[in-house]
Length: 239
Image (cartoon, rainbow, N blue to C red; front, side):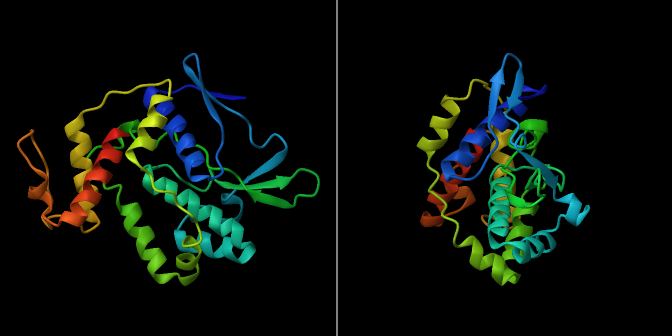
């Protein structure tokens, strides 16, 4: 086991994202809460872990990383897209070329597969990552633009089956996490409105709430989009 000391927010993020990965059937490291620590099973005990930096240095742009992995093995590229998808979904602001990569055979050096998704302690609510002044949705915008210009990535991500993420699933995961957090609900809501604005949803000038007098129709009056916005808001704030 590998032990790490951190905050309740970091523990919550790591535990929640592991379960969310399992729900989507994505490869993930295993974490447990253990008396004030978070511990993880060493997924590299049977293999050698090689970080992406060994091939890409500090260049972590979607285009360059994906193109290299696609040339090496299409499955590596697909696993990379799954990691990026989770980072965007969970607001992971700390993905870099040292915390994802490959598992190699210890004797032959042959690449066995991509390492599982790990090191998500700075995602979700940790490090005040839901502060509305932080433009985290820029990651989603960059990814959407990348998919629009990269045909291979656009086609490959369509092959990844994404289960519908419902409120019931989120609540079930949270209920089974032994770490609980308490955050300012208005800060959460306004951060989500900021994300939606940057993605082109809602008023162009942006939207914020200050109390409980605002109604959904103040933000958007399209009934179909409104339902999607409500679900998105619930999931983000509930996290």
